[in-house]
Amino acid sequence: MQEFKSLKDIPKQDNFTGGSSACAGCGPSLGLKLALKVLGLDTIIINSAGCMTLLPLYPNTPLKASWIHNAIENAASTAAGARHGLDNLGNEDMNVVVYAGDGATYDIGFASLSAAAAKNERIIYICYNNQSYGNTGFQWSTATPYGSETKTTPRGKENPTGTNIVNKDMLKIMGAHRVYAATASLAYPVDFLNKLSRAKERDGFSYIELLGACTAGWNYDPRLTIKISKLAVRCGMWPLYEIEHGMLTLNKDFSELKPIDEFLKMQGRYRALPPDGVDRLQALINEHWAELKEYNKQRYV
Image 1: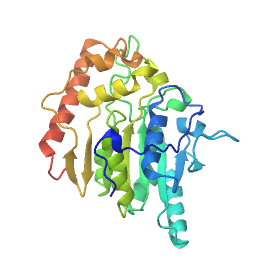
Image 2 (image 1 turned 90 degrees about the vertical axis):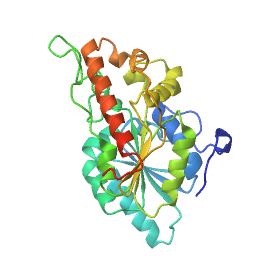
Image 3 (image 1 turned 120 degrees about the vertical axis):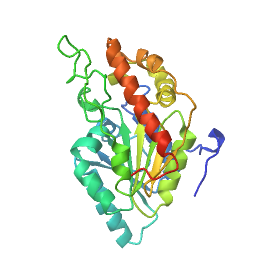
């Protein structure tokens, strides 16, 4: 397994060039750029309909790797088919990677994802989680965190909280499939690339969920993508951990989490979240963090 110890170890070759139609500061596009540094050109990317579908627009593409655009509900099934076809042709070294948003992962495409994971298909599934249906105008998904305002969960007199449903614990669900499951952050690229490198070498299904900060939907200055990504980890909104064979490992442990106030103030989607909503969100974060600390290095699912 290729191991990265510092930023100096990250390959300099870019397989994702400039000139895409993604927003300035787009987290998911930065994530794919990093991922291809580890995965290389011997990679087929299967993309569910979403924001990243707009990267290659015929006849142009910023990608040097192969790309298959798929319907939103069946990227994992397509990837499994590609894997079997390649294996039958003797091309076992080619990486088959799904790059899909949270709407395609948590909601519409979950059936095919779950089936591919249960069968332990040898594919890498990367969910770029921008916590919404971003490509269609920032609507609520089951990945949207409590307190976030979206186009379908607007704040108002009758509902000052915005999103008042607690988001799905997807990593725990995927861990329960007995596959490799991990979270990742753009602010910790060495951790992200080591997880990808590990997934690349595994003889089975791997699920990596990258927080995909969204400048347009989260409503923040595009220059702040990495800062917001780092704050999300430090305040416990996006803890970094992995689950393998049911065992949990906390990759970034802190004796104390930062309060969420600074993280919230930097984003328009949390603007006007009332104090009791902030308290409820902080309580949810503390509860999840305490659970991760309790089960660190132990069986979790």
